[in-house]
Image (cartoon, rainbow, N blue to C red; front, side, top):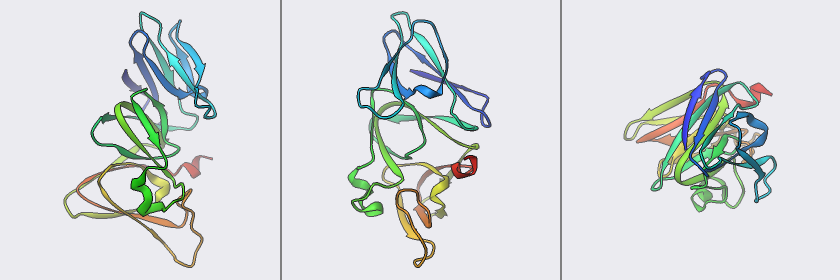
Length: 201
C-alpha cells in the first residue's frame, strides 16, 4: 500500500493506492471516493463502522477524508518497534498492523485499566488523523517535556514516559487523560496534534 496525502495540514485527505487483491481496514464513513471495483465488506471483528476495502485484480485506490478538519499522517511501522497511539487517531490500517489497547507495556501508566492509548505493531503504513496540523517534538538524550494527553498523537515503544496528576485533589480520567500530564524523556520523537479534538466537537 502506498499513501499519498493532499490538502494537508488543514483538511487532509489520504489516498491509499492498493495492489491487486490488497486490502486495508478503515472507517467506512471516512470514504470519500474509490476506484471502480474496490469491494467494501464489514470488518469481521465487528468494531463499529470499520470495514475492509479490497482492490480488484488490477489494483485500485481509496480516498479517505476524516470527519473533522485537520491533518493526515502516514506512520511507517518497520516490524521491529511498535508505537503507542491515541485511541481516536487511526484512520486506516493494513492487515500487517495489529492494535492492542491492553498491551502489557501500558501497565505502568494505566494499571489494569484501559487508557487513552493503544499499542500498534507489525509492518506497514498506519494512517493517522488528528485535529489541526501534526507537530513533532524531537528529544535528545535526557531532554524532558510534559504534554497534555489531549494533544498527544503517538510516541515510539521504549521511550520513557510517566503519567501524573496536574492536581492530585482534582478530577482525573485514565480513559480520556483529563486532569493528567505526560512526562517524556529523550531520546525519541513525540508526535502531537496542534489542536485538541475536544475543540472540534
